[in-house]
Length: 115
Length: 115
Image (cartoon, one colour):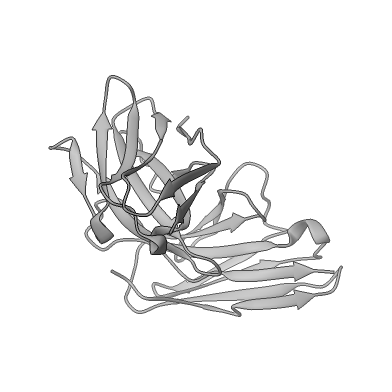
């Protein structure tokens, strides 16, 4: 399984500011995903981070709000822009396992609280 | 479109008793099915998966799950619950007949094991 490190693990942010979350994987992976878990809710896919091209966003998520970078096969960032209290969530980075049998491995998550 | 339903928000069971956490799915093609567990303030940990083959799948920590194609179900089971099994459990699906690699998650079921 891949080892995934996320930074920051948690943060408290002011309304209107932006925060960038980093995701580092210990091996090269083809596909990386960013999920959001709102308080008491399930996981919702924000986007697929593609190396060398723009991220692919799910319905309801836009690049201006959640810009994503994927400069290489081991690293990605997700920025939450112009934050509001509704953005208070856990943001999770995940990767597909190397054998491509389907399971995703997750980082510990970044818990954001927006005041 | 693919979807997962977890009909129980919470399951309560006494330590030592068998437990079942229910999951039903909907995909247009053939499913890959997964169970994950989330402990407080942690990311998701992979428990087990069904890809093909035996309908009874064994996973980590003594958990198993039974794939039932006719009922489109993939219930998680354990013969004897431990207090340490108390956590949030997510069922997830991937339609293997599409190119989509991301998983779709259910709403989660909180398992509470009483001593």
